Image (cartoon, rainbow, N blue to C red; front, side, top):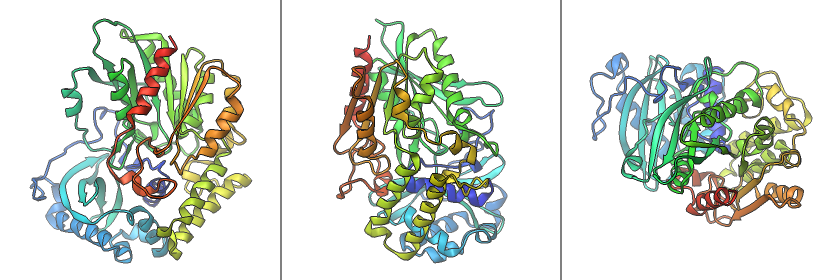
Length: 475
């Protein structure tokens, strides 16, 4: 993908929250960099000054000034002026109207700017970038920004590569966390295994976490929130081991053509192999929990894992995917904040992409396809109804859903129930105040809004407890 595709893909993912968020393949990490996506990182001091070793770029460009200017324009909602700060390469390939509409959708829900907390210079795959933590009145959000030699923006995305603060793990005496690697060359992936500290048990049940759409990191970082880290730590505090890992398209540039097998399923199988030979894991009690896209693919994963003890779908769609996405877009189009002409045009452009998927009229150009997946990805899943496919899977299933989720709605949850309620080994539960991330919504609307994802929160303890009880009761 070229730079334009990467930037717009991330912005589109922010809207969908498959958003998951993300620093796209432009910030893919090298295979040798398993512990973190950052190298040569130097912290700035608290008053935001950049140290001398921010390399050649800072010698000719006042990085601190440029970054402050970017977020001042965002704070003032002066997106047309912001458009002119993007590189010529970006501006040659996207109109001002298109980019302004996407910028509005990405930033209009932010609260008032307070200031820039920190700026970290870095190199990712040889590209100089800056990790920027921005303080707003109601949220603190990390961004990844890159410039060309003239100081014009080549990337402005949510940052999922910041070195993780492990203080909560270090002070939690009930769990341990180890950095691991799953898979083999050329697709090795960094991950973490979280284990309970329980001397009375030598073998723990385990859960593999499978990401939603987008190039997610192992924590499934979305804005300031870390969905998978919350689940991993919560389950391990309840006696259950958890394996999570960076998604393949977070670490590597994907080939021109691939399917769900290469993007998702193969790596789940590698995670299972890792756990099944681990001395602390009960190989007969390994479960797979998929979120969003991962939940949608649970039946396909289960077909490849007959040894799996059970499966969990967290906000997994089960209607035709085009129907689910169109419902998302119709809701976004209905929000007052999106009533302006430019945003309506951008969202309707996405609806046209979705309708092309429904009509089977996808282009071979990856960006023109929905969520930047190639045609083969969607053709392989044409006609796929997850709940129908699960009828042939003998293992127990847990289906969980947030009732305020606007991305995968209660309509999908009801389809799961309608198709599988005849089975005693399938359990269903929904949560009245929770979003797609299984966090409480702060929105006053009937459903959550994209602004919820910019507010720091945690996965509901009730969700974690329900998963833990379900696994424990399957003994």
